[in-house]
Length: 170
Image 1 (cartoon, rainbow, N blue to C red):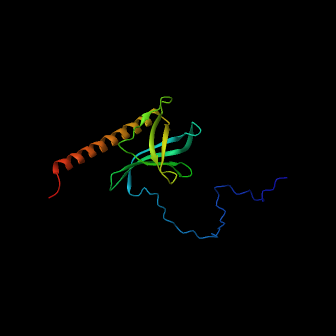
Image 2: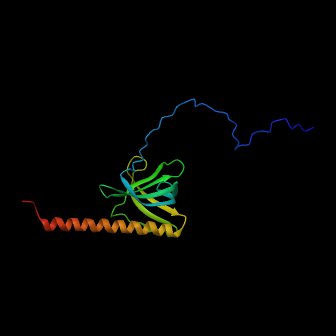
Image 3: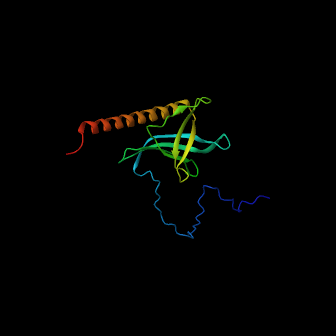
């Protein structure tokens, strides 16, 4: 027998009127990412690998967002990559004029480069491989990296040329 006076269970989007007081009061905490004094030049989703010399194999460092960040005061550019869910840093190094970024011969969506990386809290020479979702993203990274290196090399050249022309101070 069906009774109409029985209450149906409340739907998820239905307001039951119940109020729950918080047990613990949480205060807002300011978090510093270390990127506050930098402007992003590039921000792309990718997967990063590093070459393990001992095991002679590629090991995944993480999947997430790779960024090229330019410091507002010094003008130095660094590459930072964080894992998407944990935001743990898996790459953190300067983009230097001596670096070369090249296409990976086995994958048309990947690039390789060497860098002195500080992601683990100490400088280590690493060989990196980054894989993008599309070939276009790879070419964006290659183009911007080449442009940055070209600008840095020209800046070094013009700075040294200016020093030569100005001579010693009197």
